[in-house]
Amino acid sequence: MSLLSDLINLNLTDTTEKIIAEYVWIGGSGLDLRSKARTLPGPVTDPAKLPKWNYDGSSTNQAPGDNSEVIIYPQAVFKDPFRRGNNILVMCDAYTPAGEPIPTNKRFNAAKIFSNPDVVAEEPWYGIEQEYTLLQKDIHWPLGWPVGGFPGPQGPYYCGTGADKAFGRDIVDSHYKACLYAGINISGINGEVMPGQWEYQVGPAVGIASGDQLWMSRYILERITEIAGVVVTFDPKPIQGDWNGAGAHTNYSTKSMRNDGGIDVIKKAIDKLSLRHKEHIAAYGEGNERRLTGRHETADINTFSWGVANRGASVRVGRDTEKAGKGYFEDRRPASNMDPYVVTSMIAETTILWKP
View 1 (cartoon, rainbow, N blue to C red):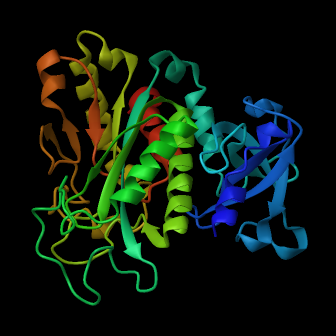
View 2: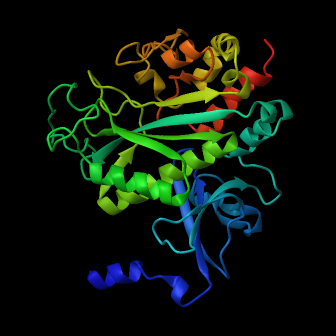
View 3: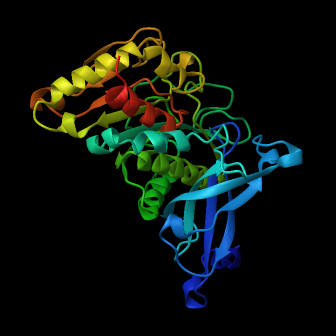
């Protein structure tokens, strides 16, 4: 095994200019991440200089068997924390051979919204709080929980320390460092309210980069849990009953919100969000109705509400923002399994482009 470890950690730059590029894309469920690698003649940092590639869409539920080729376009490049050296991870989106985005390509429409001059002028910033749950591989039961049983009630686990309160910290810390190595703007981590549940934050990131970074951070997490022999789930309510669900609270601001008097812009944006509550909820993740019950620090799924420092509201404005009269707000409705391309672009479209 030590020889295997040595081989995995071989530094290619000692012997060759060639690099390995791991192309990553989103599969047919809209949440499954797929990837495959290819050798390139030398280091690349600009996605425009990478070749397009293809895959068998019939094996990912994205194309029929008699016309199965799906083309992937490189969109964002990250350093590879697994192979290291000059090797890279490449976030891609998917198209038909004719150049049309396939139905599961949510990045294409998001990029159109983020390239709108009115949106560009507002420089939308996002910070996404990605919650997730670690499961024991063979029984799909949360890490650290007794098999077929339950731990003590919630209370000591949030930001907790100790072998009876924090389960999987080595995975969480490995992921934190790997994301920083990759060039993802991960800004923190913490243990969550339910034992075996954790959170990391990606941002601030501008526009489409927020979706690229969050998707790649999920890919890196999947790879690390694969190594650790643990399963990660982004299900918004993995355990029914008196346990917190998992969300992806999305913090948002525009240039106008960050400038003096921005609180008025924030209030107008929240008014717009209230008018499109149903449309946003429909796009904010599968199974979210199991989480947004009005309990466990959530608002009821059917009712829009907002408040200052209120974690039981649909949208929360921070005390600092209220005090400064400018800043950002937090949309608490998105589920942990939401598509960040959809959520970030929809918030920008509703608050900047939509005219009620």
